[in-house]
Length: 171
Image 1 (cartoon, helix red, strand yellow):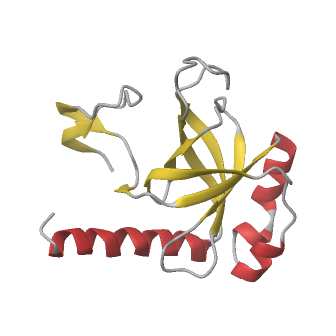
Image 2 (cartoon, rainbow, N blue to C red; image 1 turned 135 degrees about the vertical axis):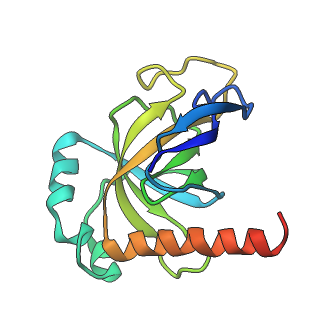
């Protein structure tokens, strides 16, 4: 969906949120500002392609997804916002454009994290290298490439529930 009106300036990284009247928002999914714990694993392209074809990212149970093998180096961070199509991740590790990651996203009302394969589509570091040595955190935009349909529904329900809470509280 495209909507003309007030849209966020895509130039995040300067710490300021600006709005430009008349710009076109090109996101397909509504996003929610949310701080969620996330663990992620950087994977190579071959492993990412294998995961995209795995049934676990399509029609299997959460238990089967949890049992899948994954790389051993665990990194962690928090989301800044989340949608059905992706999320903004804040971490202490810079990442290059095109990097594939397997994300375990902890949702507050669920007993187990959601798992998704994602790709870095925006980054505030240069080719995964540190640009600003005074920065201690880095932000990347992740596009979800593959996710179990039940987990996708859980993300959608979480966004709807949080939006309703905000409206009812008058925020």
